[in-house]
Amino acid sequence: MTGRRRKIGPGIVGALVFVCLMAGLAVNNAHAWWNGDWEYRKKITFDTTTTGSDIKENLSAVPVLLRLHSGNFNFVNAKEDGTDIRFVGSDDTTLLKYHMETYDTIDEIALLWVKLPKLAGGSDQNYVWMYYGNESAVGGQDPASTFDKNHVLVYHLSEVEQMPADATAYENHAASFQGGQGLPSVIGRGVMLNGAGEGIVTQPAPSLEDFSAGFTWSAWVRIAQAQADAWLFSRQDEEGALVIGVDDTKVYCRIVDAVAGTSRITEKVADLALDKWHRVAVTLTPEGRVGVYLDDLEITWMNLADPFTVPGGPVFTGASSTGEHSFVGDLDEVRLSSMARSDGWLQAAFKNQGPGIAFSGFGAEAVYEGGGLPTFYLGTVVKNITLDGMFIIFILMIFAMISWFIFIARAVLLHMAQRDNKGFKETFAQQNNVFGLMPYKDDYPNAPLYRIYRAGCEELKSRIGDPGHDAEGRQITLSAKGLKAVKAALEKNLLLETQSLNTWLVVLTMAITGGPFLGLLGTVWGVMNTFAAMAEAGEANIMAIAPGVASALSTTVFGLIVAIPALFGYNYLTSRIKAITVDLNVFVDDFAKDIDERYGDT
Image 1 (cartoon, rainbow, N blue to C red):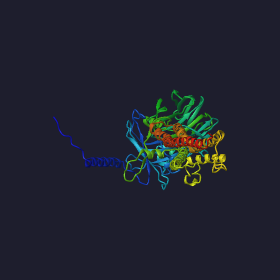
Image 2: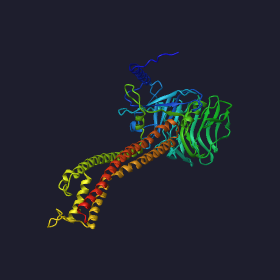
Image 3: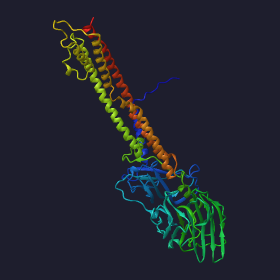
Image 4: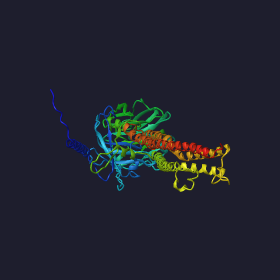
């Protein structure tokens, strides 16, 4: 069976292209832009499936930590203090509460806490939008609302000199503190306690009295040595005591009920590895169940015979009220909640805050186009180029401009040299008098042939005089020594002209060989900085690596942009120089032969 194929006309092709463009614009416009005053945005995803953070429980009002660094965020595109940063829910409408713990544009490190309205367990569809790039924006932080009402005390411990400040709305700031501050920690900066009663004291407050819905205490802890029954948390009054401590390297919780005359302690099986950060948490339910967690697992638990009321009085962190049971080690992110947090909540906190755990992913930077036009990756790469990369590119661009200028200048000079050489050869071929073109210097200003010719004539004239005849009218002849001197003058000027033609070509060879190596230096340095920033921020995923690596590779691209034109230009110039040099050599031989025939001593 046969049939005819129908040709697709240009009108149909144009219609198909138009439909594809409109479909692309429709898809692009499907992702509405929260506010056109903000130029940039990023999609931040939270994968709770088994391939991600593996959180099965649905959570609400979760404060999550976002670590920004040069690998996942371009600080140049935001305001210097970051006050234009906003977080918007997945509906691209709802503004989310957040605050900054650290925002450092010099080291390009930022730690931000964002309150997620909900975090679905076992889902890869959790995401929010981060907007930035609005110079007229004022601060949008709301630390008091970042944490829910059950967070009654949150110490980020990022202070350098001030007392530890409570980040919750209750403002349960530390009344006194002794210890080292501003030290590198698991989340930005933390504190170091060296024993001898050092620690944090928080005075009683109404928000620290009602624990009828339960109790949760948590902190990041690192020890370098075994502890002599050190108390991480303690609170006691006439009716009892609640102590969270470390004995040797084992975490425990002790409940003392003075009214009932009982004292219970959990099994000491939660072992802290030395010189390693661990998240320690203890929960107490209203029914009297005590759970001790290490990282994201409940290690041990116990049931109390009767419901236990959390004691009143000051809260001591790192020592007892008398300064005994002192803790020696590092602390960070101390929290106290007036409810018993669930296993899923504690698991999410550990995986979100811990270093090197893939909890959040950062998408590519999108630019507001107003009309919904697609964003090209070249713009993303340019916006992610770091300061050190810009420095390398700046050097390469200077190198490129110099090499391009030299190429253009030499190409013009060689063109004029060939043009004047051609004119000189045509005129010289018609001359019978060797000295006939000597007066026409200005007619051949760019001809190397004329300069060699003139040098030879001047040497010849010094030997035979002008017009080259004796008193009786006979032509003066040259000895072999004189002919040799004239030829030496021609060859000397030949070398000088060849050297002049090759002037500055070394810059092109330097651009050819040096450009790629400078670009490679920028690439290696940029990749090194990207991984160092991720190590500092404690986050490693492909979305964090990709922008920084793309920025680093851009220096290699610029190195090739310098080298490739220089390579083609160098080959072009050398071919032109070779052609001119051949003409010069032929002329020197012919001119020397002509002088020998005319003035040689036969």
